[in-house]
Image (cartoon, rainbow, N blue to C red; front, side, top):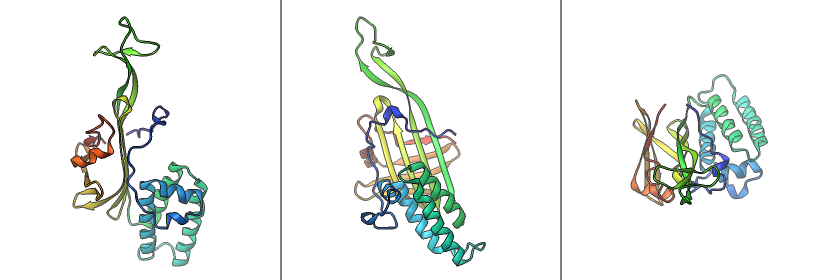
Length: 233
């Protein structure tokens, strides 16, 4: 499944909601660009918390490294991670690679739901639209653009660091990131500040996202319902 990249078309739009999460260190004392970037993004902050937890327990089950080797390789990993500077993708990949080395198991999910949408450009003049604009079936001038939803999640020991992003018509968006905890056969994200709860589950037809009504707070105007969906495998 192709993972939809947030293209330049929407780069001018501020992400609507990024649920705050604390890294394993004091963000006020972040000592370099990579640490500051981790604090800026909920998914990376959660990954850092998961990393700290897995590292503290790794000596109990990582049999191919001694405690000294584990500590040494962790320091080497941190130095290598910090070479990512502020590159989100580089930092993310660095965490995933290291977690695969020191955890008992990792589930990584990357899915996208791609479709064509539009940006409203105005009313036609004498039945015509300007430039590359198209006259829609509802007789308005529009520019057709790629849109859709993306989900990226990494689950280790029942904790998932996830990021969800949706772009609909006229560039209206939903965006939510953070920590979801495993409950039976699904993961559940809860934001006590808004009472938003999202159930994330794996079904035969795909990844199902089931939010409460309060989660509409993380969507822009007319983007309601952007979280409630199934992303096919």
